Amino acid sequence: MDTTLSFSGFFSSGKKFNPDFYNWNRIKVRYCDGSSFTGDVEAVDPKTNLHYRGGRIFVAVIEDLLAKGMKNAKNAILSGCSAGGLTSILQCDRFKTLLPAAAKVKCVSDAGYFINVKSVSGSQHIEQFYSQVVQTHGSAKNLPSSCTSRLPPGLCFFPENVAAQIRTPIFFVNAAYDSWQ
Image (cartoon, rainbow, N blue to C red; front, side):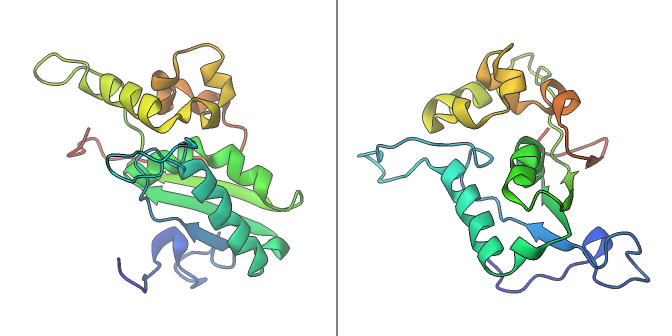
């Protein structure tokens, strides 16, 4: 991974380029766990030595940022791109609960609004994929309960099933054509 990122657009610290959010705390968590930071399995996979604990990673990252000064944040944005954009959807309300109560919080999903449609071959590939993610990562407990209380957890990876219940302001940026979708 790059050690330095260039922030532009709604992440820019320049008032001229980003008049609404230039002075906000801007958080872009690198996506790396395979479950949109929802996993929570105590056991370590004996074959691969993998730890499926993305939910714990997300909380640990935010707690680390709070300890480094974000505990004083008046404004904060959580964002991600593609699978990270899906993370910003699924973790948006959780993110808000981890920050100071008085902080203004917003989320931005960039290319993370994956929809539940059949593939060009007619299979429900993405739906099956998300169901396997839930099973492997133990994700059900860290998905929005507003969704898991009415649908199987695998379906709660689809923003179409959770977006209406997100209480924190969220912005969606999505191209009509996405290579993964």
